[in-house]
Image (cartoon, rainbow, N blue to C red; front, side, top):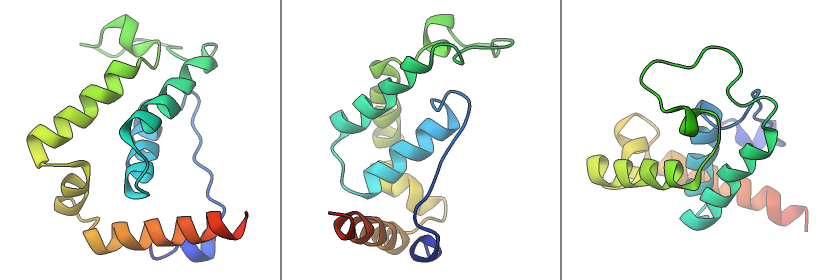
Length: 118
């Protein structure tokens, strides 16, 4: 977060945008106070990249229907897991070193940049 001001705009990219990148995007949106339903909608948009989803060998233990798409229930279940296990996505981030102060700094920096564009 301390480098956000100097590095805007930020681009996150991967072939499908639904796994690690999808989680990173979801947590970033969460830090910016975006409602869960909107985050889930954003996540499901990755399914439009069907030509890239699920290319290559399927990871062991994953259901094909979940791996080859970006179903809303996967992101909803991710949020439930973070809430049930850590209390909230913000608590999860805090426990793993991305403190509440850093989350606030990220939110403020991204919102300030967003407001400057309007």
